Length: 335
Image (cartoon, rainbow, N blue to C red; front, side, top):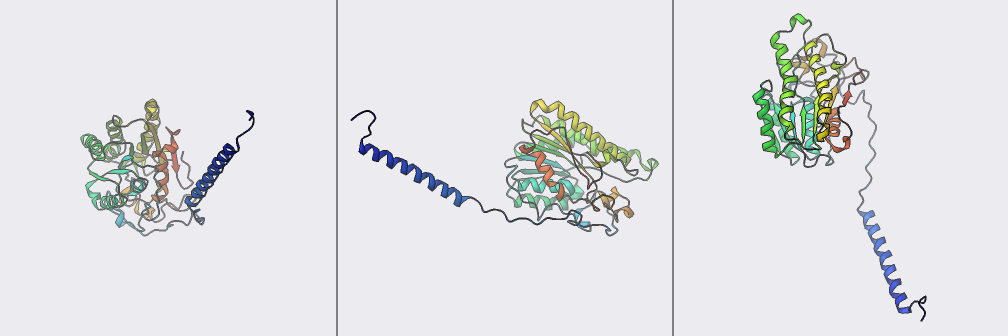
């Protein structure tokens, strides 16, 4: 038998092997196809102008800092609508102002994306905080309650220390807590109000971020809540608008400072959002009736509409975004 000839028995063996490989490949393909998830049902389009409540709203007011349960209509934070997909699995997040409003929406979304979450809030906000903590635990995630006043530097340092200890680390920091009090004239803004607003919105962000930096590893993220008023300050929110402009500049500068450490820093600039900030002194009572009507979408935003932005900025999906400000203003200017 020449070298070019193949023994018949060998040909049978090789043919059998080829057939076996082909059959196995086809079987594997069939298994893969049968295991593939069914295509999701198409979702109907939703008109953003009518998706959520539109003004006019009932006249209402609350004592600072306000509670979600007393708002009419009650804000939507994604309690029923937000569906997670594991985008933050294993992450550990600290969110200030996580009891209500935008912070609450972020906390719910983070938990449903697989993160453990610590929330900072004022003791007066305990009823709202307990609702959020229950929602986090319902997702099988660790929920950490950290009540206290972030106008105090020592508490801010303790807040971070307790969050790191109870979560077992820290990957995501969301500086979201804010104080907003409407004043018709500069003459109506007391030194105490100015001090409270600056300490809550700017000093606390500085203290908390400074304390957190030593715990953040490459891949960690910081997200600061600024506002559309940093770009277009209304006449009744002079002190608040000034703090939001400071937050934006802090965000952009810090992003440059820590980029080499692999830490990203971004901001979110909401427009008029329906949160307890508004009826607890953040807007004149009369103005609340038509709150958000001056936007092109004709209504205020709901916290649930920002949840996806905070998830995106916390996830690796936005790994090339740092020093950026993401706007959600209903069409009224902004970044």
